[in-house]
Image (cartoon, rainbow, N blue to C red):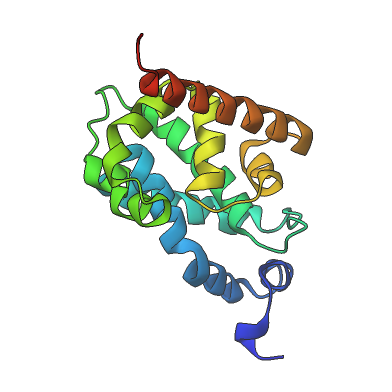
Amino acid sequence: MRPDARSDADLLALSRTQPALFGEIYDRHATAVYRYLARRVGAATAEDLLGEVFAAAVTARLRVQPHVSGSALPWLYGIAGNAVRSHLRRSSAPVVLDESAVVDWDAVDARLDAVACRSQLRIALAALTDAECELLLLVAWEGLTPTEAAEALGLSAVAARSRLHRARTRAQAALDDMTRIPL
């Protein structure tokens, strides 16, 4: 089997005895994990945390059970979420985010054709709880399935689907409130 034909699940299993193979997991997913981190803590901090995430992943590879999708990304997002929360607890100063690094609005615009709706989208996301927002962003922006996002957040698939439904409903209600024309 060619190395590039191996699934993430295969690489994780093989990396237990051949640690160098974990580098392929890094090569495949470091950019996505970095973007996830940068959207939450800014670009400079994301660079530092990316190393922490993959250092933790190398250690945890010995006990991880791959997601049914075969992708390591939900697992890595879970580790990244823990790294962000740990960083925020350690940080004494408030996080000042470079908005251009935090939210790639150009990518959002391309996907949603929402150039004219940026402020409404921001307001709709602000209407969500942190947990709802995180789940919605994992599905909408990071491209995870609800089941993969559930794994990343340590939720059951049923709880994630329920929370995602609430998040979408609340976000839609916030958008509807902004577009209502008073009589």
